[in-house]
Amino acid sequence: QNNAPISQGEYFVALCPEHAALCAGAGWSRDDVAAYLFQRARLPVRELREAFALRAWAPWMQVLRDDELVPMTERADNIRVLVVGGPGKHSSVIPSWGMTRSVTVPVEP
Image (tube, rainbow, N blue to C red):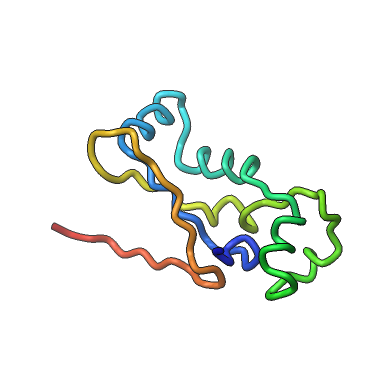
């Protein structure tokens, strides 16, 4: 179990070049992909309560009904969309360890 959904952590969506090209061909930016996933990647509160009991619950989560759907993170910009790898249609989602923030720096060849 990853605590990112209850700690509002970051998610990294690693798109292969083919999937990234499909998104770009449809006119979607990285921010558009993140916004789409933020709106649709949701879990019922019941599943989070069963998985995490009362550990680290944000105060606003304590008042939700079991059947309410909650986003996997606090806001769309917590979803980082990356293009990685080579040929082959394999993309993945990599959750962070929650309550942490990514740090990025340019890499110069």
